[in-house]
Image 1 (cartoon, rainbow over the protein chains, first blue to last red):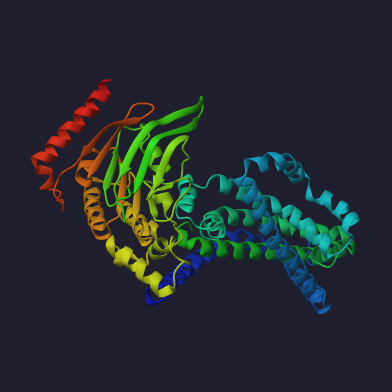
Image 2 (cartoon, each protein chain N blue to C red):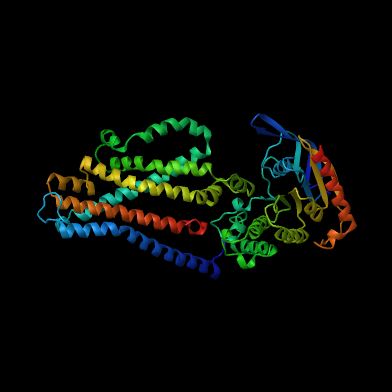
Length: 272
Length: 259
């Protein structure tokens, strides 16, 4: 590594500043996009009947959520779901990049694994839950495996196609500079694949959230999905809508964080 | 030390797989390149210039005969050689600054101070000091190609292999990079193998021009260029010897077109 010095730090600071401007612009356009939703909720609040058993207005949702919070249910549920989603995304990214990279690099491996992977990929994740519950039991490992199973494919497929579309010149540069295998992967291939990998992760994130909630609903393991199902069974419509809003914000925030990370990570490549 | 050649080919044959089957690209080629010599490989498109260079760089295998660098057979990329690709846009790492691109071939093998020194020196030789902390995608094509040349120079190669390095550049940038390359070669004493389809570029730069012809290709001519150095874009190109060589080479190509 080259010793850091003033110009390099200036570059880094410049990158931070440019990224901050970029992020601010993104936030503003995201808020603009939320405008119709906000208008709809306001209308609902104004026009809705607070005693309606089916469509209680937003203020009653808040009350229901506050009840849940004071009962000490909400925060642990959000945390449980978040932990499952985050851990599964990390695992799915690692596995997807590893397997996808190998398949992309080796046509022989693709011929061997291709049909099997294609079969597994088309299995709807909800149908995996009962099988996984039988095989692994109703526990965190089962939940995590099912989410990873669903979130793996976008990362894997994007990595594979990313490897295939690496420019031949880049491969020859790696060879002609006589870098070791590890240096080739870490210095050339992974950074070159970063845009493809991050696209895969962004597609995988909503899938991970969906399957996490689904697993919680089917097994009543702690999490937002279980809370939601219980509220429905108690015919507590205000709480159902309130939890739905929490789930929506949860997904929105995870997606926004990933988008911000993507734009920050790709800034040096001039791709964001 | 004996005057061992830098590169040596004996009855070299190269075959490449193609859609209808294996095709012979180079047949029975003999070549000797002295140390410090500037040799251009000249030929029309599709004659196998690049294939020959890539074989000498250890990137493309050969079928029979022998290709050697400093007396040792070339089967894979060899230390001491550095390759410069035509396609600078894909040969540079766009996520690394100029300085870190130049360091790519030598980092991890040297201590920080020594590395910094070599990288700075290579960047100075191609005149990019002011841009060393910039990203390549913010630079012009000519500057990006200079970054690639600096990356090769940082490895302090005894041989530079260049595949139409100036082919994608405009005439003025090309002329300035040619002069820079000649200055670098004078400073480092490196052997240069230079693939081009530009007759005047070949004459201006070279000590020897190898003219490839035919399919499969063989060496049709070997031309010594006895023009004084240092060369000058205006004066050298007005010398009678330059004009004679230019005439001779265009004549050779005219026959190829008619044939």
